[in-house]
Amino acid sequence: MKFAYAAIAAALASAPVAHAQVTCADVSRIAAASGEDFESLAGDEIDDDLYESTYLIAGANECSVDLFLDAIHSCIWSFPSQADAVQAYNTNVAAIAPCLSAWKASAMKIEAEPVDGSRLAAGMSYVGSGDFEYLEWVVVLEEVVSGKPAPYRLWIELVYS
Image 1 (cartoon, one colour):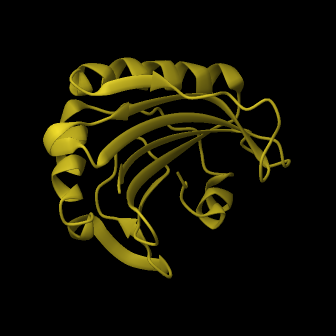
Image 2 (cartoon, helix red, strand yellow):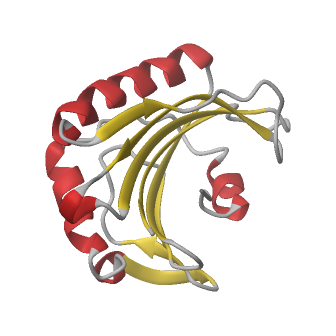
């Protein structure tokens, strides 16, 4: 699974801390747009097949729609401290779980070593079935190890593949 381009992450690294809180209304709105590859949420083009999202989850530094391979709606938050990032991750995992109670939840494998300047510190995946079999929600806490000003990022993504 791919995450939004590194250019977006780099641009957001110095953004102010925001409190992330996904809601079931966010989950429903973004999932409803997945059937048309999130095109109704695609705003200005940032790069080839990468667009600003017109729908932001509260407090997100930025949200994007990536149409390169899989269709992905992704939101990112940056945090200067591990404590803030872990709190935001735990809050969002707790908030999204009831919205996806019929989906298969599983913890993602934590990365011991960094890959491309960051390391997966925590992650939950929610895979749909039936009408949602091609959808996967992901909540990821990432530690940036390449010297960026905000060393932690939280991603919440819906992947339609």
